[in-house]
Amino acid sequence: MFERKPMVAGNWKMNLNLNGAVELVKTVADGIRGVEGVDVLVAPPFTHMAHVRKAIGNSKIFLSGQNMHWEASGAYTGEISGRMLQEATCTHVILGHSERRLIFGETSENIDLKVKAATFLGLIPIVCIGETLEQREADQTFEVIKEQLDLSLHNFKADELMRPSTILAYEPVWAIGTGRTATPGQAQEVHRFIREWIEKNFNTGTAAQVRILYGGSVKPENIVDLMSKPDIDGALVGGASLKGDSFAQIIRYNEA
Ligand code: PEP
Image 1 (spheres, protein in one colour):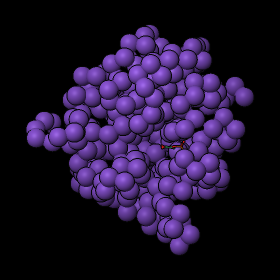
Image 2 (image 1 turned 90 degrees about the vertical axis):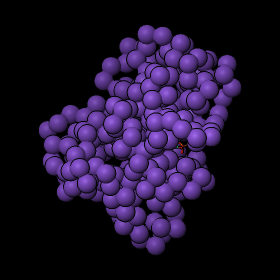
Image 3 (image 1 turned 60 degrees about the horizontal axis):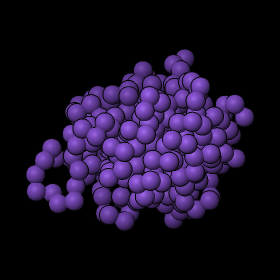
Image 4 (image 1 turned 135 degrees about the horizontal axis):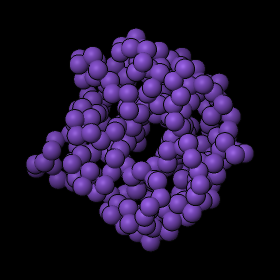
């Protein structure tokens, strides 16, 4: 069986002043010293990127954008390109977060263009998908996830190629920032469905290698149970990634 390296990723969203971001990443770097076998990533606000990179120093913490535009350059006021993220030393980019979809009206078609552009540049996309509470209660979870995958990864499907380094994040909207977590069983069920979707549309090898993160009120108290599930390969963490101690504890889940 293919061993997927777990990843714990912190999405800082529009939080922290510059000093706070620098201090936070230093605390995380200290807190994870000696940790092997888990990839650690932070996604700071764009304006903090260079300072956070400097504060990371030699620690193994990947830097990620929280979003990008699909075009390389041009008249797109307020936007940032993938190349700009790379110049800021980002290796990853979060795409299609539910806050982008729901607050800023991003469609799966937009996300598909971004995934394609990021992949072309060699930036690793972390593609987010997830159902709302209304959709879950109407028993539409799998239908919604399938549609989001079909449309957000449409270009991969057209090319019949999905890079195994691609990362997916299942983030049920009802669990984000609400303190309500999907049970490990609920999360595993959707993660399995996503892996089967990859297998069906690409191949078994790709399905075995793609990492699928869970996101939605992950904290030190629930990470161990979530990570015990075979198709959960890590976590995308919002609130608990803003405190160095709790984020480091999540990353050190296998020492609990
Ligand atoms: C997120 O925004 O990606 C997220 C999972 O947030 P939280 O951990 O705060 O629910």
